[in-house]
Length: 122
Image 1: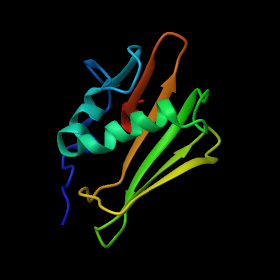
Image 2: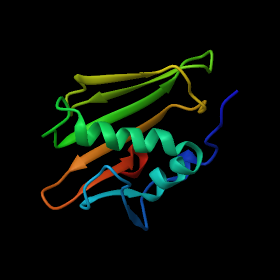
Image 3: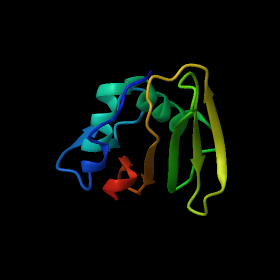
């Protein structure tokens, strides 16, 4: 059985913006909701940033929906990266997952700053 993100629905905005961990550039930030997810699954957020920065299929996409979906058996998961038309750009599969909840993120690549936030914070 994985971890439950009990308070995920409470994030509807952000007070604080945090600088993203390596390998993200200095102009990349994330919100309070993403910070909350990191308390339970640092690996997930760090891997999302690694994909966003290094995967050529995701470069130059200004607005992205990123969906983490655990499988019902609780032993594996997938992350789908979709553009603003919901076209799947990339799928990452994981053989181990320690979260029970689906988590939806947006990634916004503005001219001056890149931000990862929960869908509910948009």
